[in-house]
Length: 175
Image 1 (cartoon, rainbow, N blue to C red):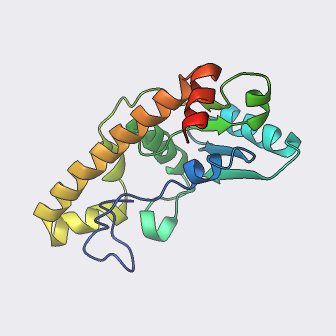
Image 2: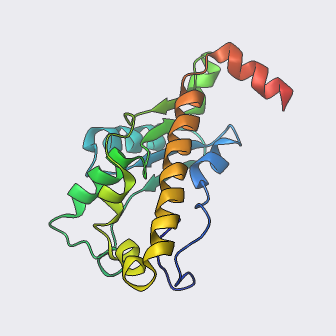
């Protein structure tokens, strides 16, 4: 994600991350879910059950903490997943094309609006704090952009999940 340090982004990733889930949803025939078991275990299980029952391709994108890269141990991993969702860095949703066939919105946003600032989540992870030590001004600049990314992503998903079936049909006809 933007502002994180990685092997090929040692000065911090300057661009927002790609939205794999959104890309898959554009096909209209793929079940897509984004989950974080530590944030909402019931939503995670529901997504797996729906994905398994879907008669086509299914994609589940799960937040998994990485001990070396994130600096998160097994004890605090679920707490960090919850913070990721609370900050808007990671959204929980399910996109089930079967709902569109019933005239319903296939996108169900299972996250609530962000309740904490992104740094409250991000600065628990080594991949973000590394840059604050080597390039503090750049870390601050990138974190502000990453906060905007999270806010914009939330607003987009909230808007898409709030569309009625007729609004969706109108949008698809325009595409």
